[in-house]
Amino acid sequence: MIVEGEMRSNVSETDSPAEMDPTWTATILVVPCVVVLTAGCFYLYGAIISLLSKTSVRNKVVVITDALSGLGKECAGVFHRGGARMILCGKSWEKLEELADELENASDPTVTFPPKLVLLDFGDMDGMAEAVAEVLDCYGCLDVLIFNSSMKVKAPAQSLSLETDKLLMDNNYFGPITLAKGVLPSMVSRRSGHLLLVSSIQGKIAVPFRTAYAASKHAVQAFFDCLRAEVEEFGVSVSTINHTFISCSAAAPAAATSLLWPLLFTRKPGGVSPDEVAAEIVRTLNNKRKEVLIAPSLPKMAIYARSFFPNVFFAVMAAGVKNSAASENM
Image 1 (cartoon, rainbow, N blue to C red):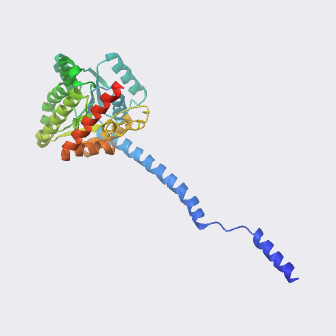
Image 2 (image 1 turned 30 degrees about the horizontal axis):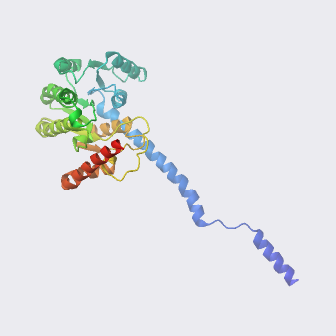
Image 3 (image 1 turned 90 degrees about the horizontal axis):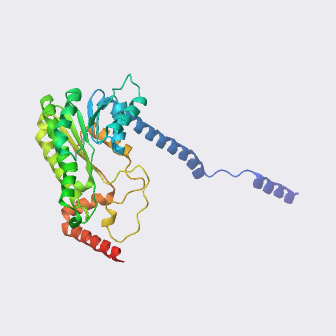
């Protein structure tokens, strides 16, 4: 009888459900909370950016150069929906009209303004005076000017003609500063305005085979850095945003390499999307930050290395050129 009792006792203990591990229980409860909290943060972030874009530019005159580019279209959409009085600049009148139609069809006409269009080509310096006058004639003044145009070229210095060098300087330096000088008197007289330059990290650091491009970006960066100090007393803000790469599509992963210089401008998967840069532009206009750098850690480290360890930086650049030449000869 005692044996049977013990057996029944053992069976009952075996058949009883096992108690759940407290750690597992906590995990089950915490994971959904983390997911919900993360989703909420992203939603709140998007809502704040949307609110800022509307409150900061409503009824303000905003000019965007190269509005037909990916970033230009993204900025045009953000500011148009925010109630800004848009002046869209580009090289093609037909494409500008298409963009304006898209913006108007996708927005509420009771809270937005029809965009005004101006033909503007920084490569045509002879037509810049007329373009500047047209920009000012649209509303008689402007509050925000976003410089978003750029011309790129990659080649050995000795293979580039002087005409190509001049064309890059016109598009990346002389054109933008001509427009800036043309609108500055209006901003200074009103003691209000914001000039925002969207430029490349190569305005801070130069890598091989981009001599003309890097030179033009260094020049325009220096101009706006000097201008910032000159016009601050008149209530005019000057900001620069330097990025490495903007893309709407995913980029292929970079091949493994033992050298650093090819990685300085490695395109991260998907690149820096236009909406990311547009969101940064909105933030910069709100907090009036003077300089913003959108780049992975390695390019940022290269900028500091160029300043504090120039000989090491130059050695890495030279080694990269030799490695590139050796690869082409194989």
